Image (tube, rainbow, N blue to C red):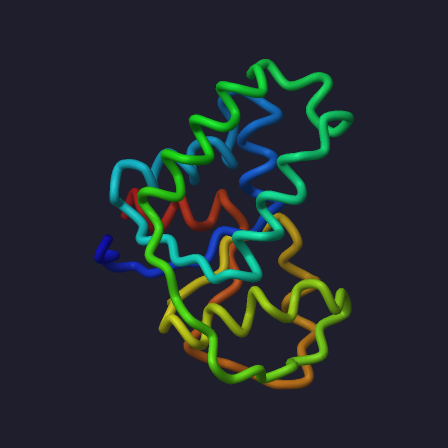
Length: 146
């Protein structure tokens, strides 16, 4: 799949939020990707993180979606994503070490934004990448509407 602009990275917490609650900003951000209004990119590290979290049944006990429905939505989302190889690890030293790969993917894939519910975690980087904005789902949706 060739991604159209804007190229974005959808953080795992947005994907999980979309699967846990019907409606809401996380689900709308995911829908924007499925409708090709945002071009999500994914790397091996992010794909594996998505799979790991989606395999945690206890996390989804209160989800309105069955495991099969969650899997279908995940597969639909992946079909909208472009795979990006990350060849260089910048190690931006984010507060949560587990988030470094998300920022590295954004840089490697030329993403204009990371869509996340943990905006403050990404703003504490030792390295600055001014071309990559950190957006909460609501801010991403506002830009899509403009």
